[in-house]
Image (cartoon, rainbow, N blue to C red):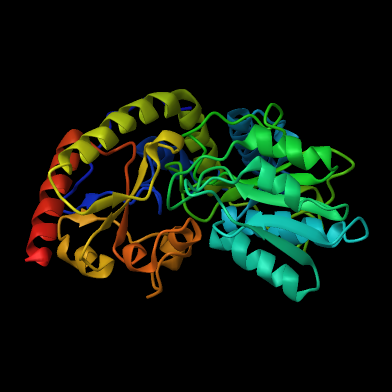
Amino acid sequence: MTPHSPRPPSRIMNAPVYLDYAATTPVDPRVAEAMSRHLGLDGIFANPASRSHMAGWQAEQAVESARRQVADLIGADPREIVWTSGATEADNLALIGFMRANRARGRHLVTSTIEHKAVVDTARALEAEGFEVTWLEPQHDGRVSPSKLAAAMRDDTTLVSLMAVNNELGAINDLAALSAVVHARDAVFHVDAAQATGRLPLDVVEQGIDLMSLSGHKVYGPKGIGALYVKRSPDIRLEALIHGGGHERGMRSGTLPTHQIVGMGEAFALAADEGAADQARIESLSNRFLAGLQGLEGIHRNTDTGVSVPNIVNLSFDGIDGESLLMALRGIAVSTGSACNSASVEPSYVLTGIGVPRARALTALRFSFGRFTGEADIDAAVADLQHAVATLRR
């Protein structure tokens, strides 16, 4: 891992204050520097599958080093990490790959109504194939109740897929409690941890996780790279979705992007070293942000901060359409919800899924903070938000 370097400013050339870290994070300069050494002729650029020359061996070594960095953050064995193009592909491989490979054991999948679209849409695709899906309703705080999960389990349930941290609310599921319910019925537990890495302690062994989807760009790494943790067990079999060469132990074919893999590995290593400190600092920034808005009336907090990660805060504003407020905030880059759903004119299905009335859901914005957010950014965002809300309400 490269030595620590000074943190860059969060704004360059009068750009808006970036408060949309849940959508994506900027690549850490230390990650970008590591990636740059694996691109050109003067670096380690060869195909990791080329085992007939030194350049290929060096690329393979870089890939395996990154595999270990990713595994270390979640308490896994490096041999249990399968590279993918991102968490979306990892979710698809986990759900479709597992359900197809194990259809003789059972055709029943359990998930929740407020999962990321990568799980929701994949589960719907499985329904179209003839699999059965039970959709759990979450609690009002955005978490899934272990007792509700227990009631949904059946003899033919083979897979349960629930996220670690909700991408719109920041709500944290009790993974250990949920996995205990799953394993009591001899099913397999998949977790989408895209929003959790670097923000929560994760240990796949202690928390009883069998499959876990991971993302590079949610933790200051590059886009276009992710991984699926696949527990080494005879009970965990996946059917490949991408064919052509049998890479990644036959689970995901394709030439590995060495530079992106190195970037994800470096990002995960930095998260292991700095994640706890990052979150402590971000929690103070989140408190500063909420304190700055106390003078504004008609604000509803959709995020239960007692059971959520501090970097995500979802707020609704009475009497103001969320899209109009978004346009009025010239100095802040935020979103009305998940970036994967931001083109929709419908209210967030996550908010309505936890019981937020439609009218209030349409006024919601998600603010998310990160490694490069500073106090000056928070103060500028609060001032801009106060001005925009007052202007629109007039």
